[in-house]
Length: 112
Length: 113
Image 1 (cartoon, rainbow over the protein chains, first blue to last red):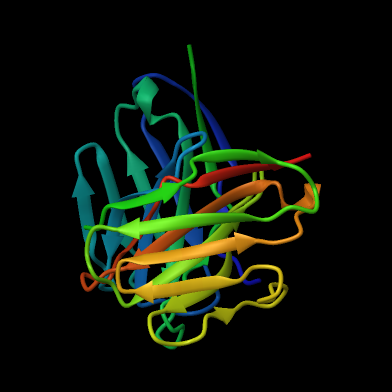
Image 2: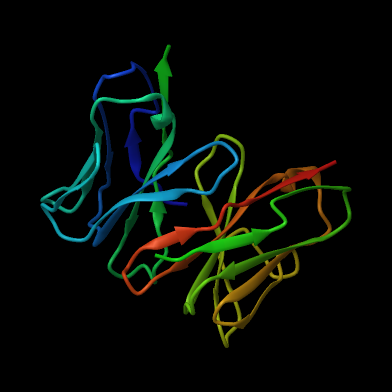
């Protein structure tokens, strides 16, 4: 099925570094959702975005809904070991019947 | 938000058998979804289960293999029938809330031998 283009696929960073990942699409979305998934768990919603240009923070996480409505980014500031996991973006088209389109995920690994 | 629980959390099954996964939501929701996530992959939608109607299956998934029940607004089941090793996966249920967000259960990890 259709997927969003999520990058990078994986990231190796030092504790304390900032992290940035993004998702792009050729089509327009009405909603962008960012999730984190730990091994063996279900995805946990981090941030939800509903308006073009919207910038939302959740603690050290910041996400923005692109002005063109075709992209979104997620930033994590001052990474800590518990940030390790897989981050997924998901978007909702206007006529999608509430079925999300998913990115392939960004795996975050923090070097000791 | 919505709190979602799933049973069982994990299981190991023999090929040819069936497993029914239960999903319970702490509030009434119209839409419930069942996903499959194979190791190292993103989520793939199996079907949408709305109360009072037949489940709607995505391409590649059929009712005979993945029958779904939705008896009320807080509960749904997914059965994985006549299992094979290729069915080994994490199965996730989710809901779409009135706040226009989608929440997930903790998942059921299935291993078919």
